[in-house]
Structure formats: C-alpha cells, structure tokens
Amino acid sequence: MKTVDKAKYITFIQKGDQHQRSGTSALKEKDYDSAVTNFSIALINYLDALSVNRFGKDLSSDNHESAPATLNNRLKPIGVTDFHSMVTDCSEVLKLKNVASYRGVNLTQKEAGKASKVVEKIKAFIKTKLDPTI
Image (cartoon, rainbow, N blue to C red):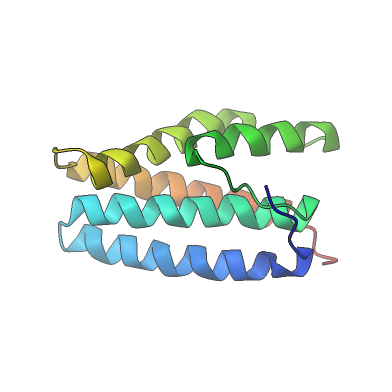
C-alpha cells in the first residue's frame, strides 16, 4: 500500500470510468475476456478511489484479489459496515480477471455480465461513501 494524496481519488474514479466504458464496449462486441479484464481494472480503481479518499492509501499489492477484504477491514473502524456484503462479489470478479488473462479458457456472456453488474453496484456504493470535503 502506498501513501497517496487524498485529492488524487478523482484520478482513480476517472480511470475506473474509462475502463468501465471499455468493458461495456467489449461486452457489446461479445469480447467477454476483454470485458471482464476491463471491468476488473475499473473495480480496482473504484476501490482505490474510496481508499485514497478516506485513508490516503491505495490498495496496491501483489494480489488484487485481497483488495476488497483489505478495504473492508479499513472501513469497519470508521463505521462503514455495509461494504462487507459486497466483498465476495468483488473478489469473484477479480478472480475472473486472472482466468481471462492467463488461462486457456474463454469467459462467457454470463460471467462478463455479472462483472458489469458488480462494477455498477460498487461505483454507486463508492460515490455514497466518498468524503465530499476533499
């Protein structure tokens, strides 16, 4: 985890938005592996946006799959407990990224669609939890 100027959270949101748009475009083109990869990157950026905004630290690590649990552990002490229910969905999307990128199988429309829905849900959640004074 790296220390990041809290005001930089907006950059993570912008990057998340870019990758979400790319994922949506790939989904429409039936490029499901590309869609999931882009949705995963969007998800990581949205999680980083909240972490940077609230704590001044990103979620960088060797294993992105741990990012949702790490963020959940940071949020609990400040009274944000409603993220807990989303940790599993986030982790599943991040696991699919490894399948899309490094395994000899193709992802399905159903998997890409689920990734899209999780990203939408997280993006909406994050926006309600950002500190507006930053």
